[in-house]
Length: 339
Image (tube, rainbow, N blue to C red):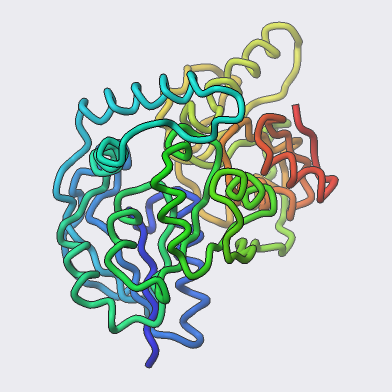
């Protein structure tokens, strides 16, 4: 049977992340016509890339999952490089799209950013002939950059999941993208940004399927705002919590903030903040259906699965006006507000 590979930096049912969810959905859908391998590392934590899982091959719902050890964890050295990159980006002149780093320094940044897996790269170099296509997501990580150069262009499919962040300003990513047979964007807004950096590319809007079946609203004893996903500053959760607590100080209201997912921020203790941790899909959709408002203040998204899921439950959403993709979600649907 024809075989397709999907390459992700990490994957596990317990991992909350858009790239992981999208890659798994594509793997599931491709099963109708292909034998599907998911190639990933033994890491769960994207801040360290520690080998939390054994290196082995398993089968998950008919999909072959091949795990490879990470060769080196992330260190303080990478954080120093990242700080240099943030500084270089801040110093870019208007109209200057890329940071003027040497090829060697750019590749050193990507290597140290990780996850760098010599075992994964060796497997792809030796076994690429068995695949009709290898789909890499996202653009950012070493698993994509150092693997893609090992295969013919005819096999290379790239799903960038691109947003405006400092690493996107490295020119080597544009060189990589221009090698792809096809680029799969999630949204028109992501494509517009990508082409402003990398030029026009052979591409399609891929996107992601969203469950639109209506659910019974959660029956909580109080009205609430809802956030679902990874709870950290990169997702705007610090801003969300601070604004909400300030609102509660200024107004007498029974409104609470309900959050689900992994708390990487360290939420403050407050009777007005209801942290529920990981919840089932059923409970998540019921919470979405019952919320007064779903809130996502992240500025860096190529697609927001949770925002689209909340819209599908007919719940209005509040998003950051500084996130072009989220603004596009709201504009096209009429289902919320940007602030």
